[in-house]
Image 1 (cartoon, one colour):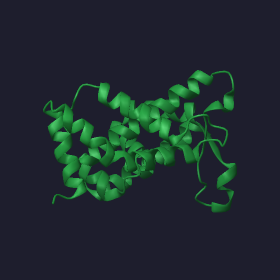
Image 2: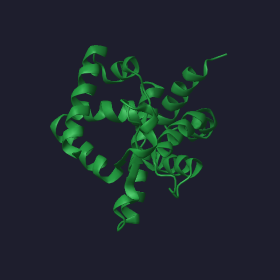
Image 3: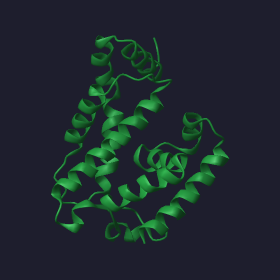
Image 4: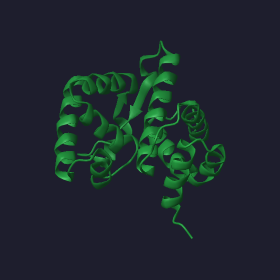
Length: 185
């Protein structure tokens, strides 16, 4: 019996090769992880957010399957792309709400004061703009932030996915966090 991770990779490869039934078999297997990513995104959102995790997962799934099939070397690439799609959905949703400056507020835990996590927010639209700007300066650093904070990958997983050393990932993350902090202040 194949491991779930191996079967995800195999199904992704089959789908990339044009096998539509692989896509149908893939959804039940990846749903829990997609839901975890959606929960993480929405946990950081303001409490009055109108999107629910299930709706975010379903919208992301629809967008993923509408995209041109790509080649995925492993499941982490797929989950990274899913996290990007979810981020884009949330940004589009915040833009649609438009006029209210706090419409895009994203709650981010304050690492220096865990008890203050509930009162620290970041404007999702500002974060998106800053990430896009960072991507113009250093695309790998922007990708590291997306993979860490939006897809939930650890340093080793990001290193494997991006083909660099864990030390490089750590340096990129620290530099990108400092750059984003400055850009958003």
